[in-house]
Image (cartoon, rainbow, N blue to C red; front, side, top):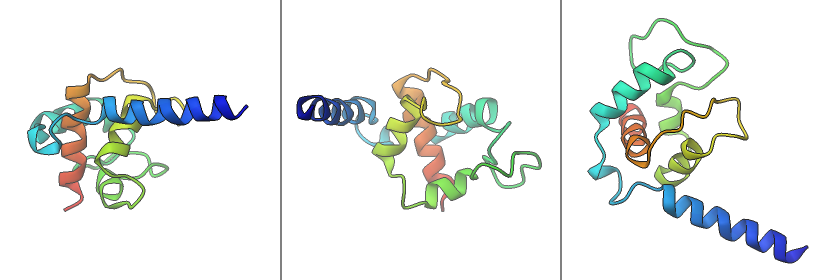
Length: 109
């Protein structure tokens, strides 16, 4: 039993490392992230100031960006594997995830 838990923890760390944007958000393109957000996320989340329609049952991108719950690595890991949430699996590439994370972080300012 301990081996299974240890293996699961190891796989979780590996997944975060693999899904984390290479080179950090500095190499990501937040403008591309904005386009991804507007296309795939705006139906449920408020992704930009001035957006008029979204669900009030989910956090805004600004709230996510300011949340102490997520940082660049954990947000990237979550977006890469959202199966344990109500979010759909968008099958984003690592580059798209990095761009989206950079955009979310920009919304927190």
